[in-house]
Image 1 (cartoon, rainbow, N blue to C red):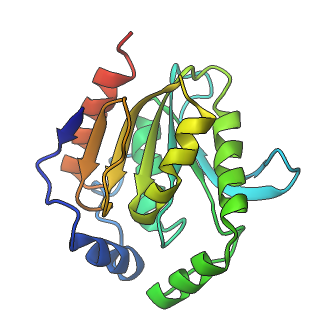
Image 2: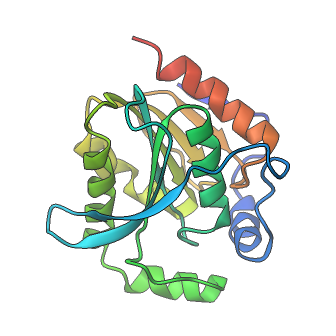
Length: 207
């Protein structure tokens, strides 16, 4: 099942979304509207390696949201989503994929992603899922643009716990049995956060 958000389709908006995330401040809610509880932490993979992650929201929340970055990594838009979803009462983890390497231009992002072994990106995502494996029995996964490449692997990691997917500025749809919400851009605007909050309220609370 696929939900429309009323936002533009992905297609040609992917490039705009990537560039905007690098050169524009995230257009989140007005300053002070969302209290930041986000922390930057180091998590461990099953291989014993560590990776950076953003975490927010109540540790004992019933629902968890895993954010998988796209090409531009742990940028301002991703941080804004972590803050917004944590404020809605979900336990949120955004996994770094590039092992701490910053990307400041689109060209740098492309090179870093090309140089990163997919095995390590998958290990980091699994590490985020493992951290959400306590109280959060029902999960939503939010993937950004090229992060959708990992969707199939994630479904194999959590075959029964993913209750919803949110696909952001993706070129190709996610093939999943769980409901999918598609957003056309990565910015955590008021309308986008409201659409995601409504979607999560319906899917993570369903039994």
